[in-house]
Image 1: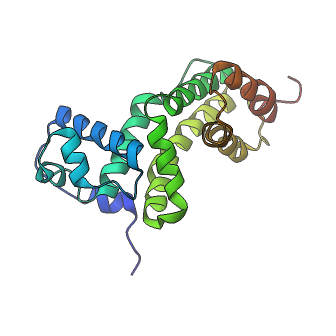
Image 2 (image 1 turned 90 degrees about the horizontal axis):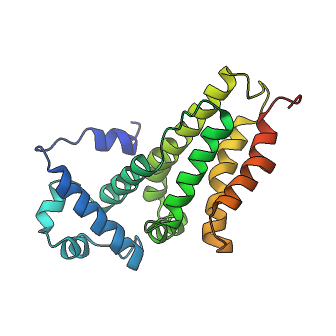
Length: 204
């Protein structure tokens, strides 16, 4: 029998109506705990203490710390990574990259580093991360490229998959390995010297 994906398993869970403001407070607490101790050391007890909530309050919303962490990361992405539609490929990509860079280098950055650093050691977390966070990020980028293609700004044989991977990888590499700032100077250099040349028709 095939194993249900993370998204299917979580989507099948039903519960009583939730207080969205309380959910946000619990997610923020989970983010702060993860930034302090990492994913493996994160416990529901620690999140409950940080949020000044009962542990049962958390378990009514999320079955496990995996569900809590992935939901927290997904909410951050939806809140911080806009589905850009500025009318141009350059504008859409620049808005996406600058928003993603701000997300990674902001208050959530330390937690993001802690989470990504755990992926090689936590297969279930890695699978859930790929099925949710990466899919959401790639869907936004693919939408940008689809619109650019429709406007004639992306050549038909462009390595779209490589561009999607490079966009996220370059920011993550700079955040986690070099420690250099994720500023607009870097975003513009990545966009103008790497991504756009891979996408635009040769005549441009």
